[in-house]
Image (tube, rainbow, N blue to C red; front, side, top):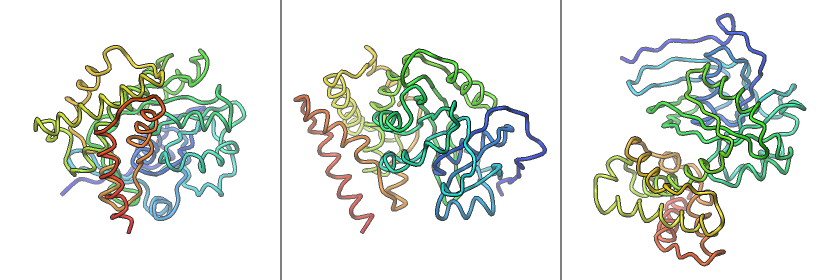
Amino acid sequence: MPVQSECGSRGDRMSTEMSVMVLGAGATGGYLAARLAKAGVPVTLIARGANLRQIREHGIVLEDARAAREVVRPDRVLAVEEVDRPADLVLFCVKSYDTETAARSVPPLVASDGHVLCLQNGVKNEQILAGKLGPSRILSGVLYIGADRLGPGVIRCSAPPKLIVGPYFGLDLGASSQVRELFSRAGIEAAVEPEVSSSKWQKFLFNCGLNPLTAITGKRLGELLSYPATAEVFDLLVAEAAAAARAAGAPLAPDHRVRVQHTAARMDISSSMAEDLAAGRKIELEAFTGYVIELGAAHGVPTPVTRAAHGMLVALDSATAS
């Protein structure tokens, strides 16, 4: 039987001056809220629906790769309309298709001198947030994490997370350094990059291969890369995304292809898109294949493999939703 322990949010906390609010209680937001709360950080988790009810009553259940479980209770678990005081740092963890709506609720959630750290998939979300708060208050985050939501308030993490953070606009690294220290305190590897947009695009390329292929096949990346045919499809999806991004002026690293291959070789994971599809939830089509097709069309770059994958995902998404 898996061992289950419980960590309270008060009494055993380390003192800290930075208050944190996590907007979005899915796999990423729920996991980060639990890890930060466990490390003694005052955390308010914003949730809705079944997640809100479950976490309020039972806390967040974290399961590791060995199926050992522990329960962590953040300081506060609220619906967004119940928030009565702002936080120094807001972790923005909603799905990309909810960005526009969720961004409208952000200004009263963050202190006047606070920041929002965008931890979403895709490369367009920071621009939307900057339109609500101003670019200097937005931090851009690249989070590699093998986490999935097993049910309301229950999250499994199968791979140690790693965060890269930097300013969306400007050269001031003060807030990014504070975030690095905060995550390091919670046992999460974190690094600051002044030009974080390059890493953001690097993850985008990886995700453009990972998400469609794992969602369509229902298989993990390690198995897919062991077959020459699906390994080739992965490479073609990444290559089309890179060609479209380069044509659009994205700051790709010269060795972006090697970096994607290195990441893929060490991450035998599924994807958020595959997990969402299997659970009957809406998938982030426009953040990945949809955006590659959009960039390709705008800059005259053919994207036939991406278009084929997108078409299959549209059909699968519609079948799941019906």
